[in-house]
Image (cartoon, rainbow, N blue to C red; front, side):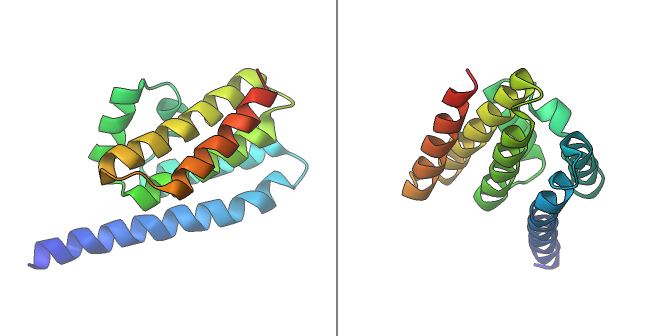
Length: 140
């Protein structure tokens, strides 16, 4: 019982860390140095949540699913991380289209994995994927 509570606490803490990083990102990217804002956010994700964005965007979908499973990310965590990747991708689109495409594609894959993990289809996630696909089409 106590071990389950500890795991639950760790998962909740991870959710708070992800939410905080996502909420801080708009301020970092508006500081006239988008690349530095993304770098800071990626470092925080690595240090505080053990999520390596540079590695994450290079993984194939099966590897990505295993990566997030090993970190015990919930559907909510995946949605938050997807939102970050979408915003980061949009922010760097003008300076680096290839990297922006990678971020946006991984944002969609994370939402797909959230659907698979939850074994349900969420209309909210479908809408999020469609919005990301629209943004992605702009950069192809």
